[in-house]
Image 1 (cartoon, rainbow, N blue to C red):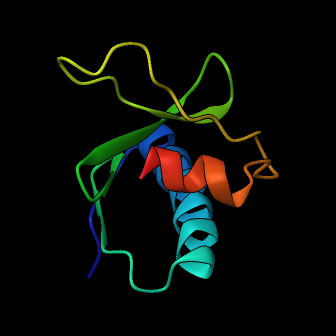
Image 2 (image 1 turned 180 degrees about the horizontal axis):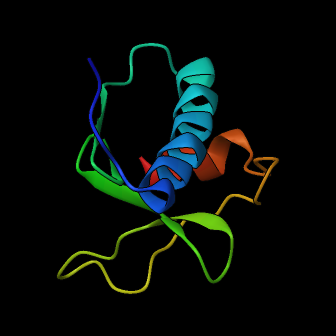
Length: 86
């Protein structure tokens, strides 16, 4: 039995899963949770932006303008960028 998500949400989740695997490969102890179309990594929340075709960090109150982006298809983040995001 599986959840019944729209095609758009399934596509977003697939991109978030790719990002999650990349982060997990770099830091296997990192705890993450995928809920609906958002990825929770520690205190950070990531989502797939349709307009840019990238994974971005959701700006939360008081954080300023911090966003972590990964290229659509291939994640072009180095280790220091991933650690800054997480």
